[in-house]
Image 1 (cartoon, one colour):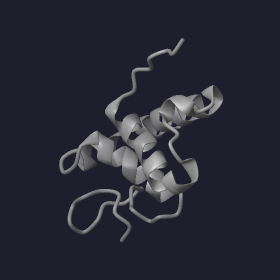
Image 2 (cartoon, rainbow, N blue to C red; image 1 turned 30 degrees about the vertical axis):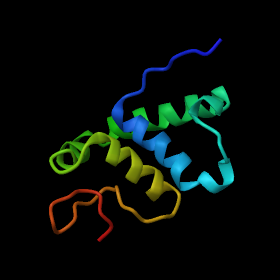
Image 3 (cartoon, rainbow, N blue to C red; image 1 turned 60 degrees about the vertical axis):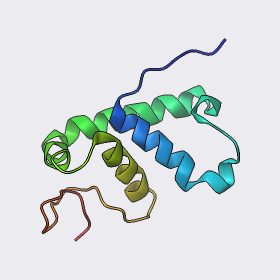
Length: 98
């Protein structure tokens, strides 16, 4: 039996990016193929990041949707330098690596 998990838009973007960025290694795997502990840890990571960075994200959401923020967080945490972090860029979009 498959359980349905309701994820916020930020977390959806984070998980989708994980599969997109690492797609070559994951083959045809989907989010439902994640081991429960891994999925739970990723969801908690997203919740904690959003809570700790609510002001940063509020500015980010002025320019981009929450799913993009989750996507950018995955890329940044995995060394791709896409940029969501503690600073705001010169263009006013927070999180870009200056």
